[in-house]
Length: 69
Figure 1 (cartoon, helix red, strand yellow):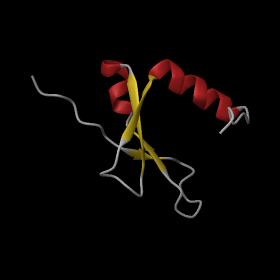
Figure 2: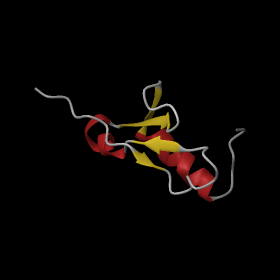
Figure 3: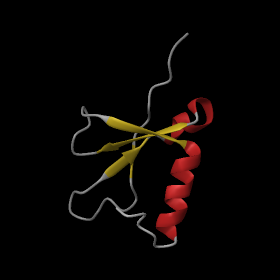
Figure 4: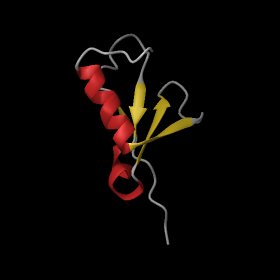
């Protein structure tokens, strides 16, 4: 059985001078996770975030909450 590879997508806010985040939302439905990585270091580590936590994070960002970041 083949493992689905992440399809990385750059943040729509990535035109801010190079501080970019990429996510692989294609794994959300099958793995219930959203990998997140630094686009400047594509071979470096990626965080794996549960879809519920990622959705909560995105909703908070849209409301203007930083969550202590």
